[in-house]
Image (cartoon, rainbow over the protein chains, first blue to last red):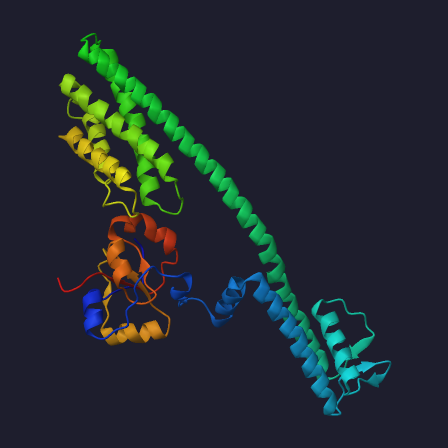
Length: 306
Length: 74
């Protein structure tokens, strides 16, 4: 699968416990999943990644702390008697008023406004430049996070709409396939089948059903998208009914299984996909009725290949 | 994922050390119930059955140090 740094722990969880390793149980919380750093990332990149992972509230707090922190640096520097912040040609006093001026200068610098009424001198010029650069970076990340949150919400909504649309199409398709299969089964029982026309309809129905079965299989195994159980139940019931009809048709007309080749292969595909739909083999836990329907799909699917 | 022929075997001490350094991500490939019952702290759950499909989605960085483990002892 292309993983270049794969390690293995042979003793497994049993060996881990016997060696006295710490164990976690219950469902994991987000915070219990460690932040693993990629060996290729430099310290700067890791710092940036951490910055990007902060919540907007924390970013705002960080930005404000930076502003106050730099203001304290400017103010303390004033005690040294060396050139620091100046206003009207005079150094900023070391009083409380002086601190407020430092705080004002720090805000003006962090927002890159620069009114010019307070100016840094000497080493403080470098400190002011450093403040402007770092505070602007944090502020930029904060703005992008706020915009990003809104975009994420919109993308989730769009995904949800297209996902529900897809589910709707699967339902309609399964219903149509079922209706067609029922008609074929009735005609098969009444012995009014034209073999050539039957073959082509049967093959095309099998292909459509494979497509829908793949989607249902994906819904059950890819758990990022949540499907409501009533919707899933409808899909599974339709699917089970389709497979059931197929089994009836095969019993009535064994020729439907076809010669070795494509048609037989299609039935095999159906069977392989159905094999993985059962109450205990899907990753999620479902209601007993749903599990029973899944088990039925699996057992009928097995019969189709046989 | 564990079909790679060059998956290096790590000792208990190596695993503990790398977990402390946060340079190793443990991946539990057992079924859900076994995963919930007990696991190495911070493990990611990728059941063997869905490993092929889910691994690229949940572990896109293929250079990460990933530690795969299951029940062990047989």
